Image 1 (spheres, rainbow, N blue to C red):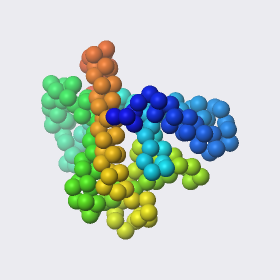
Image 2 (cartoon, one colour):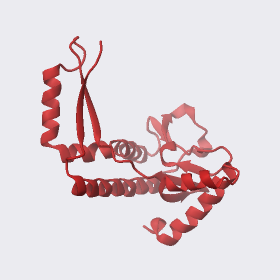
Image 3 (spheres, one colour):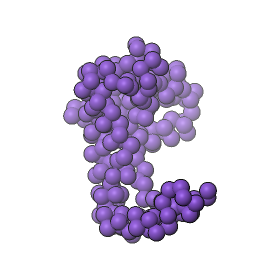
Image 4 (cartoon, rainbow, N blue to C red):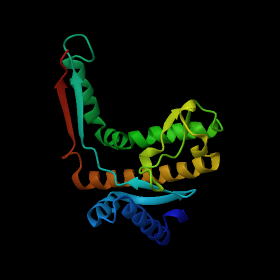
Length: 195
């Protein structure tokens, strides 16, 4: 995809740097920090979309309760044991869970020709800039949005393509982590949930 070419990314990075410098009054510390948090950039309309660097989740918690709400101690331990038998799949699925939900909802949005229960639209991260964070393109009930910022079908298709690429990058990152550490750094923890 040409949007992820090195030249395109360099241009978007420079554009992002100029926008973020305006937001933080040319603070070098803040602009460097903001740049360090972004994995790649894209542009739709005049908006810069930032896809954040993914932090691998390797610490999973499972609650149980003895007061009749939720799982019992034994059920919870059985669940953790079943997860340990398929730990690799669980690890990957948990790390892409949020992006998979967004992909599913965006596909529905496209299939319904934007007449789905929710709509996607641009939300600026900073009011005085054209920067949009990856997570800022959210679903809201149809009557909660300015229709000027609503994604068109073509924009939604492009964004879906970007999300699929982002998911691919996260899976690749998780596979590298798994190859390096295996299950040694994956923590499955249980806790007693107070009634």
